[in-house]
Image (spheres, rainbow, N blue to C red):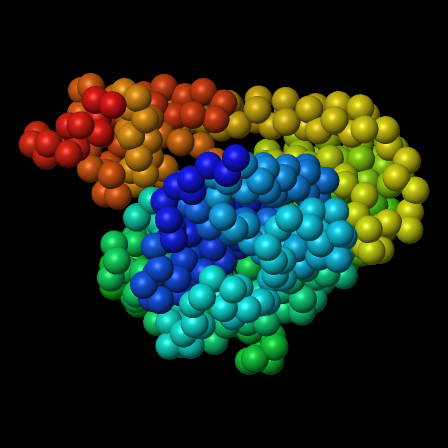
Length: 450
């Protein structure tokens, strides 16, 4: 017997995967809201839109399991309709339609107008850059380009996102102004490849000029760079970073490996020597810079010798932030023609070794921060702590600063000077300085005590 649907005509958008998907979901929700639709993010609703990830095996598995979960709810009558969009749907639509036919409709990454039509909404071109934010109000992702022209052997993103397409500077400035007007203070610039920005429309790498325009937006205090590519990095970006206080001394630059043979097979267009020199140039030009990178272990042909070279290089470079993934053998990529010849348990062991090494490096670097004072933005309150970040930390992936909420009252979304009193490998503890005694509202007291 069919149960009664909940939250009639409410659209629940479920987001999986990376920050690019977060951005896309926010654009979708903004369009729906402009059509006077009742839309929520990962709450109850009788119509469900799942924005999927199809990047690597674990992400694909999570996406498929989420689709199956909501299809089961549909079969039970707990939801009325299920729509699927995003990278998994773009890449595997025919297979998904065959294997999970109870989904009402599948849409690719470029089919927003069609998805809106299925949701009985019109695509409004005039909503340039307008979104319904799902992040804390103080920060937002700003996607400056879509797609990727890089030929990396292991990566399926071009299959799902298409060729690189930059968004014009004037459009991004307008979007930044809209975000600032809504209370956003930190912009996190994202793309598959930030360093390629502008080549298609301005015929030159134009990230530096974009930054120079964004720093003029009133209300924006931090601008953070994510997902730069090492080959062809525009060094004028570092001059802007050094000169403009709004541009955080922070860069996320996935390097993947350091062995020359593997870098060549990965089609990264660089070498051990060139990569090391680039990082040395970063630190020479902007000594205060925090460098975040990601690495892949277990790529086809990664011998123990190649892995030890990578491990020694990580020890030598002492990255402030580092993440490590095990290689995922992806169909229709160049590396899929290679034999996936590193056992999964070996891949995982190597990833664990890298992260154990990084944990020690991070702990040592964090100890140097004890007694120092940093500008910190408060993202949220959790239990008895206000949770904040310095300019050297990005949300969700980096260090957090914890401040005792039983001793000090702070406002989320505000900046404070915080003196670091203790440090662990990935967490800092501190005391806010020169904080006036603030009288919290009833609503804020309720939040704090829940």
